[in-house]
Image (tube, rainbow, N blue to C red; front, side, top):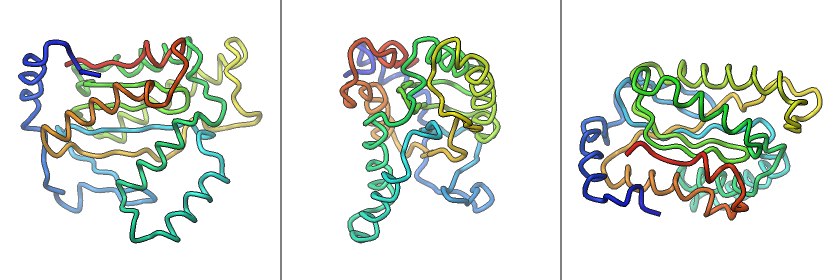
Length: 219
């Protein structure tokens, strides 16, 4: 799937962000190291993945950890993330964002600060996870916290009205961690945009899924 029919115009627009691409890992103070390392540096183009708290059942996580342990030489960090994302596409859990109302709210939240706190470049709102490509103008953690906070409050308030199917007694809508990867170069950017735009198709979602409607780019 092409990001735009106007391919030459798309290439020109990508060049507008090329100064925000880097293959340099930066200084140690730019990184927050936890279960997953996050780079918090302004004015980078970053690919982000947020997932719902029940998007990967524990037995699936344990299965993947066993695979990685037994084949440690075959799986680098990028390969591990691809493996996790392949399981996300199976659509485990309540998949609250398969409901139009929920997906619509998520999209409204993502675009609300576009052009101010960040530039929203590409997005895909899948049933149980969200892919976003942004150029951030402030701390990534603050941006993501604001997204999660607003969406969580809305979901808990409206879960019965829209039959979102959230697990009984659940206190956290989202997993506390998120995946992020800064964009290295134009090829990396292009591949990331293509991946995001094709996610609903690659996951073989029903064509009636809101994911097709709430997947797109500003390029």
